Image 1 (tube, one colour):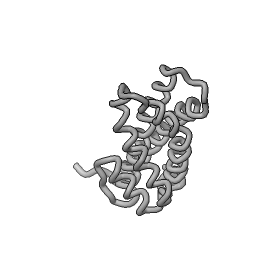
Image 2 (cartoon, rainbow, N blue to C red):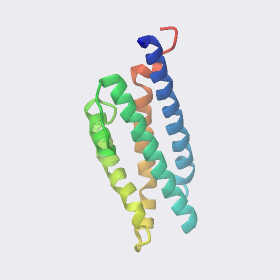
Image 3 (cartoon, rainbow, N blue to C red):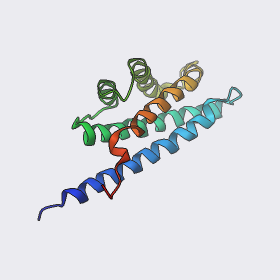
Image 4 (cartoon, rainbow, N blue to C red):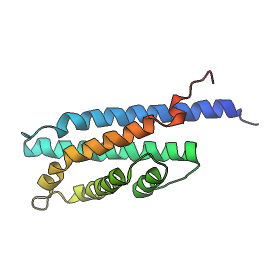
Length: 150
């Protein structure tokens, strides 16, 4: 049985729109916490967790978009960031900061060590800005404008 390419395309676009909505929602929760300076340690740790899940939602959305739009299959966050830079979804500067976010995400499992939580929290506002830039780049990509009537 052959699949209708139009149906497959609509399904892929629906998946991409759903992932974009998830990334937008995750980023909204991070933006709510990132601008605050008066966080308790517990709130700080919660804000850092928001960074982790926002980053996950963003790179997975970008990976899907890269595969659908550019035919580029990526399997890791850093490969997705590099491909996003190469295709213009991220500027060189934003890509460098996104790589820092990936490293910071990996450090979160060691937050019990000393001042690491405070160091990560100090970078939340900057990280939030670059995540917003990436989302705007993803939203501006042509497949997002696809509608079933096309």
